[in-house]
Length: 467
Image (tube, rainbow, N blue to C red):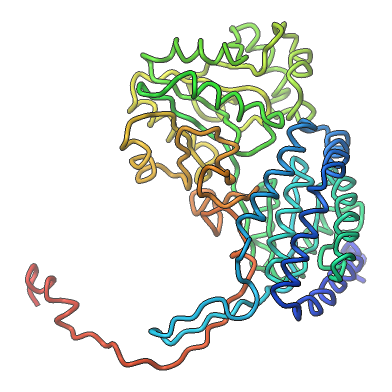
């Protein structure tokens, strides 16, 4: 071993175990694969286990809410199972006789999944189910804070896999403690990397030399226009903003309200437990959240009383989240970025055009490609936003953090990883799903030739500009 390089042989050993298990699992038929998927889901969804794991996750990471994590673990996994029900991922999955094509699903091999501390249970379960559905093995690399919860989850997964006769090592965890060097080596020796979490890890994955899927940063802005139903909008914003103490990258960070509805919307948000901070309290909160100009990790995703006490803010009983008024975007306006806390930035726009301009500024500052919300009854505005703004999702009249990653009342795939396209520096622009975990082999046969005549392709061009 090179004395200047860290010893990563233990990572190679784990990946070798995963490869051996994957070679066995690759021979399973669709029914046995689907049974393994159910086993992984039940490892988390069994109610008593779900509660114990959620309690462990909050206790060891210091992030989020136990009751909300229980709900997230259940609903995200339930929705994923719904999405996968009946999906074919073994053998021939599509035939097109007219084109002479047959498509065959093939596994990738071993997937390395980098797991964030904000979701040490739901995210690895989602990644493992998608990978296993396509007959891959997956090596989980949790953040240091999430290692213990992930390890307990893995023990339950192995027990359930034993019941259905599937190899345990199709889901395996990196040796503890996982170092930065270990994670970077893992990225180089697996067949695909999936990264949810820090943008540093995303960049490392893309430069690892291994095919990689990374997701972008969130910084959700939501527009409330003059046609919105304010009470409904306020209720949904509160539900989304406060869920799991704003650990989700899809939690609202900024709200942009048109001028003639501003006061009424502030009243509606106050009725939902929002407290607008005055200048003095805002200054105290700023100093507390960004000491020395850096976001205070100790206060991320904390209960409101913890945040209020740390900042020295007297929050009346019933307060659910803080609101801070701002009028700028960029490095000199820290509230214009992702905060991962129970703090909602509020902007007042002169009109709808001003609201769109502000939303564009926010996306260009941070969170480009991720998502944007709008509360409106105007029939055309959501489509106009989708046609013009740098975002991969426009969430219309919904609680944003529930809708973006899939909901039972919208058509998005259930996922905890949202691709942000070229705007967010990502290779995908959709929600991470099982289709990203398979290769497709195509058997190609000849068909009657379909070669067009030049006139079929150029007649309109010639007529307009000449030959």
